[in-house]
Amino acid sequence: MVKAHESWSIMSPTGAPALPPRKLSQTNTNHSQSVESIATRLQNPLQEPSCIEEAEWYWGDITRDEVQEKLTDMPDGTFLVRNASNKAGEYTLTLRKGGTNKLIKIYHKNGKFGFSEPYNFSSVIDLVNHYRKVSLSQYNATLDVKLLYPVSRFQQDEESGTWKSLNVEGLWKRLFDVLVEILRKSSSYDALSKQFQTAMADISAMRMGLQQYHEVNKMFEEQLKIHDKFLKKAERHEADNLVKNIEIVKKRMKYLLDGKAILEDKLYSQVSYSQTLEREMYQLKQEVAALTRQKDKSVRWLLTHGVALDDINQVLNGTDWNTCNPEDIQLPLNISHFDESTWLLESCSRADAESLLNGKRNGTFLIRPSRTGQSALSIVCNGVVNHCIVYRTPKGYGFAEPYNIYSSLKDLVLHYSQTSLEEHNDSLTTTLAYPVLAENDKK
Image 1: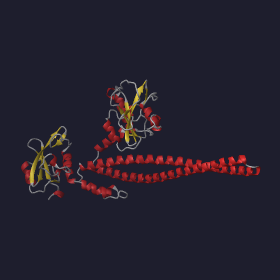
Image 2: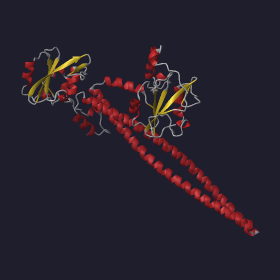
Image 3: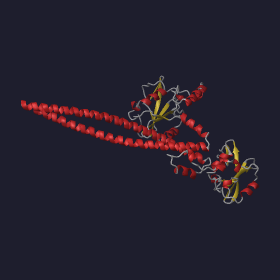
Image 4: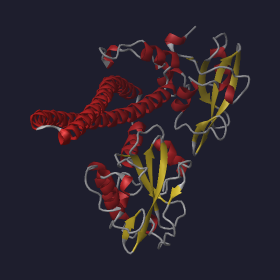
């Protein structure tokens, strides 16, 4: 049963049997074949998985916190399956219902799987496929929802690879597409919301109409009782009139019941229609939330690759996304930062650097060789030329551990063009703002 006040409690039947340990994927002798199958699934995501490792909704040894992060703000019916945290060869289905995560343990006995005995499914895949078509209320009356929206690890893997291959121009086009799609889906959501409100108003009116049918029918039934009472005591000539009246009342009742049946059919259809609208609204809400996360991620990426936040905000807030094209928008970039020749001086000494930088505005900088065999940053701050070692380590470039994480000097320069050096040296309250040899950045 679902624990009403513990959305993250494991649900299990009383006295569930102990299970044999599941073979872990790391020890599978057919590992290369499994990898090949998963690669095929990436190319054919709609293909039915032949084992649980190929299922898009199976996440293996993912933690509870990671599950909660993936399901946050998702609509009811969103789900994934992971290995149970007790490592006893069990699985856990996590399902979004009522704005919280419901955890249901999947048990196994005698080659069959299920939530509670008797276990009827030959595999976890069969169980999931069943409840994608049928409500889980069969298992638990409080879970009146199907497994509607799988959280796909394949899509997220593909997305991760795509991000690594982007450049600023490609990312900007991607961000443009995301913003247009957010606008389109938000408009669709607003339209569906209006239809849903109209449908709910119609449902309310129909229910009121059915109540009126009930009251009128009750009035006719009382009239029939009165007629029957008088008919028993009536004279012959009176009885004929009463019989005629009874027939008239019965005809009216039949007409009334026919009208009620038609209204009930309309109500049923309208309720089904409203539920469809609600599902579509939930789906759009999920998609807009995912797109918004992509937008935020894109903005963070641009900030670390030479685009100023003010410039991004100016474009985001000052553009008509209904009419514009990507090529119509000029996104200001710190172009000179991308040109290493404007700041990387391979033959520059410390004295040469001070000569070049003296009198320049704060934030003017260059990178040169250091006598230590490393590189050195020379930068103007508070009217003084300062020098910092840039370390090259197996992890990357940086000023100090654990910040030696940049794959190249250019990546380091692009990052600190937007981030103050103050995080490494309290006296360096500046960014790498102006490459010393950049024409547009000269004082």
